[in-house]
Amino acid sequence: MNFRVGQKVVCVDASAYLYSWHSATDIPRVGTIYTIREIGIDHLGGPGLKLEGMRCVVSWGFDSYGDAFYKASRFRPLVEKKTDAGMAILKSILDEVNAGKHREIVDA
Image (cartoon, rainbow, N blue to C red):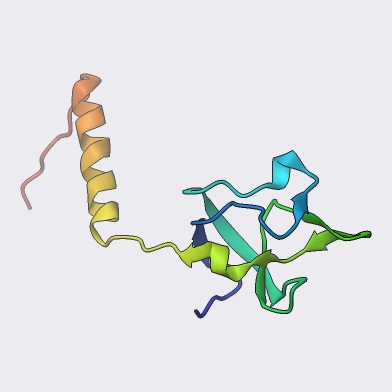
């Protein structure tokens, strides 16, 4: 899978089957969207990701890693639908109508 720094990804696997999590605040949550801040190799030698605002603190035997890489296989690129922008505009117009505001229509 190809990842790039700055890309948005979604967590698809938050299990900790090979190591222990030490920092409860930095455990990825399934379905949560993150931004990649660095790409490298995880502590098992596979592809890994560091995420904005997150520190992967892991323990492997007697060793502890304070800012390790999360396993890349636990994430998928976020796919944004082209209709999302259009729906946001329509929602803002609906919010204005529901709030009693109105727009003036000007003929060109």
